[in-house]
Length: 117
Image 1 (cartoon, rainbow, N blue to C red):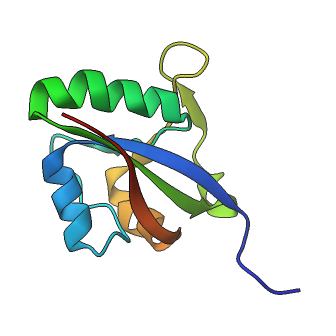
Image 2 (spheres, rainbow, N blue to C red; image 1 turned 120 degrees about the vertical axis):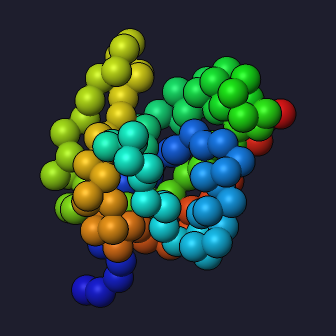
């Protein structure tokens, strides 16, 4: 049987600058992290991503976006789930130096599912 491998849905709250960089990468990859950003952290819960985009990105960047994307489940299982607060505040912590490999395992495109201003 052929077909695409099982995927895991992830969300990423982002501001307008990062979203522009994703657009320039044809919605297929996340841009490299800045030197002061050693971790790329997608989240596992859409509501958590909404809270960050709405309550943090809008305040600091004037706009916040929630993106959704799929990653090969076998690959993404190498990153343990990190609980960053309450029981639904779950993230994956991807070291910046592994982001290119992480991007190579995105299945399909990154899509904007919520926008806040």
